[in-house]
Every structure is written in structure tokens, then in C-alpha cells.
Amino acid sequence: MEKKYYLFEDKSELAAQLAVDFNNAVSEKVASGEVMTVALSGGHTPKAFFEILAESPYREGISWNNVIFFWGDERCVPPDDDESNYKMTNLALLSHIDIPASNIHRVLGEDPPTNEALRYAKVIEENVSSANGFPQFDWIFLGMGDDGHTASLFPGASNLKEMEKICVVAKHPQTGQKRVSLTFPVINNAKRVSFLVAGAAKEPVFKEILEKGASEALPYPASMVDPENGILEWFLDKAAAPEL
Ligand code: 6PG
Image (cartoon, rainbow, N blue to C red; front, side):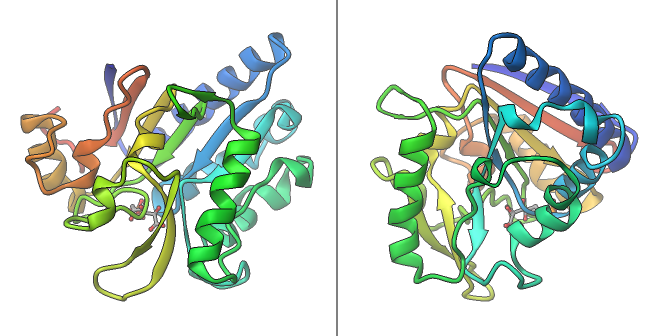
């Protein structure tokens, strides 16, 4: 696994560079006549990235036909609920770009979580090519919570050890809110995984992950992201990684 760290002054600079990289990645797929399968994250940092893609030159410059969107995790709420990652992405990006509706595979947060985790796993299997026995996303974007969670894989949760399923039902440890989340076998099978981490609140956890590396010994799920056959990128602002 190739690991790269990119440090930026602030969240806006981080998001701007990510938009450049995203544009380049889609152009490569267009050149080879392929689509790019992307799993998106919720959170504030990705929102800044989405908002840049929704503006020129990306809004009209990116071949959105070649992009297939999924979510790495979603809250089990209706799509118009303020808690919905889909709603955030739709407001920040999807409603501004010319992308076929069939290229957008949202988690049906309004449906019973257990049924939806099974259904969504099938949607992923049908629309994402597989390798090593699991769906292999071209690119998975992840955030990291202040507690070191990523997607909706929370510290101490039993689903951190899920090695068979593609999706699981997760539960937020404080609020009890149900979520549908990708599992580590899928996350760690991706060709490219990018963490978007900004803000001083992330510093203590990121520092520990940086010092101890990807290890199950750590309590942080984010430290368990380790795409064996892919690239792991950390996009960080100075507040989250003052020591880098
Ligand atoms: C979610 C997100 C979650 C998020 C982190 C970081 O649905 O809550 O997917 O994993 O990425 O909590 O969020 P911020 O970028 O807002 O700190």
C-alpha cells in the first residue's frame, strides 16, 4: 500500500486541490472510455470539496457521465432530512451538475436499516467491478470523526471485525442513530482511498495514528484503513496536522 500525506493551509485549499485531482482522475477515465466508481463521505470537509466541483470550471468541465456516485455511509433518515449525507451532497453538488440520475446510487435512508444494508450491498455488487472477492471502488473518500471513526465505523463496534459483508448497519455511539456503512473489506479493497481531515479537533487522533501507523492495536477505526493494493492519501490542513 502506497501512503501519501498532503498538507494544506486550510480546508478551502485542501478542497481546491482535491477538485483538481478529481478532475484529472475523471479525464483519465474518459480517455480510456471507462467510468469512475466513487464512494462519498458525509461531513463538513467533503462539503467544501463538493461545492468547488459544483462551480466552474468543474461543473461544466467534468464528464459526469463517467462518474458513478455511491456513499461510504449514510444516516438512516429520509433524503430530505438535514442529517442525510445525500441531502448535503445534493445541495452542495448533485443539483448543480449534469449527471444522469442512474449514476447516483443513494442509500435509501428512509427504509428499514437491515433491509437497506442488504439491498445496498447488492447495488454495489451490480455496479462496481470486483477484485479479491469484493467490490473494488476506484476512489473512496473518507472523513475522520474526532473520536477516530470513519464512514460509520465507530470505536469498539463489533462491525469493525466484519470480514464478509459489503455493508453493515451501524449505530452512532452517542445518539443511537442507525447508519448504513461500508465495511473494511470493501474500504481496504479500493484502488484509492482519500481521507479529508481538517480542524484542530482532529489533531490528537491524527497524531496518534501517524505515530503508530495502521494497527488494530489502536482504538481508532480510521487507523484500520489500509488499502493493501491501493493508494491511501491523507488530505490534511495545518490545524489537524501541525507537526507534518
Ligand atoms: C458521517 C460521516 C463521518 C464524517 C466524520 C468527519 O456520516 O458522519 O461520513 O464519517 O466523515 O464524522 O466529519 P467532518 O469532516 O465534519 O469532521
